Image 1 (spheres, one colour):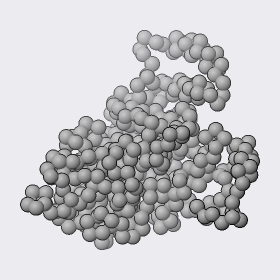
Image 2 (cartoon, one colour; image 1 turned 30 degrees about the vertical axis):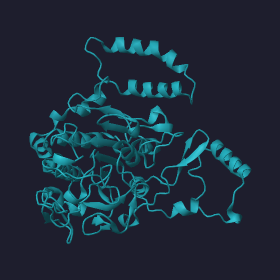
Image 3 (spheres, one colour; image 1 turned 120 degrees about the vertical axis):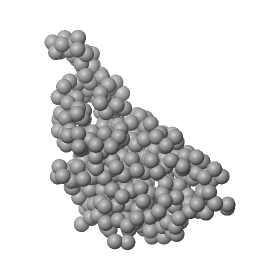
Length: 433
């Protein structure tokens, strides 16, 4: 921060300014109005955020380089698979991504995402979900909760934010409060637990129970933790019942379409499309909860041997999702994101796997009305260093928010403290027409 004396704000003036902002929550942001008006802004209505927990190897997926060899002595650093051309001239993916290669004109692989957290999955996961490092004094909201708070659900019949995966604080609402949290499920067939009324509880009995509960919930003071719980409980009661649960009946979809999506992960992606179609604003879908290759995307040691099964499953499901959204005329309205906590180095470890790398890795944006170009950013000959156009995690978040029509510089209020939505993130201007 510059220390020019003429720009120094006294502590008293700072506190007065903060108090004024706290008293006027209608202000979109703290200063910077002129700067924000020049930001690129999109018109997407939804986001499907696909999470590859463990650390996807960019050099084995969306940023292929020269071929390596884990079995040679000494081992040769490089991609484990051959590269193939895509629909965008000059852009290549690895051989196990043929479906996405054919759809490259509809996406942008951001090859130069970077951060400094490499040895701790939980910290890196939190950083990619919240855009900030863990703080001892503030629990920052996830990107899903921010989008839910800023935009709300498209339809009053569904929640704003749904999670298909294991819940944790990194995916939660943080200081925004429980009302902006997620509804989650682990099983696509049964839907979220607790939202179906037991058969032995008829509608009259359910209404009597809610009537008994209502005066207790209304006693919770607004703005307190119990008050936030009351709001969340009221929302859960509103959603409970067949009108919401019908969206989880994948059997209503044609068999041929379900087959195109593939296995369990593909069915999650199909469900994400149904939820978006129903009006859910933000859906996170976790990939590979069952560790089909033995280790998931965390391909140390022997985990690398069957990594191709993950890449193939990702390709099948994501290419089906993009085509399905396009055929339903939802692709321009829906930003599809493929995210992971960090990448992998070109070198192989002692048993043929790969370690962690945060200095340069890939994440993907598709649809959402963006001006796609196949790839953005350039890495060196082994995808270890950034050569051109680095993208920080706050920049990546700012791009998602801007695509959804959210000003990434707007401030949220943690009590009386204004906190910008992103930590000085700047949208990738080249993706906005």
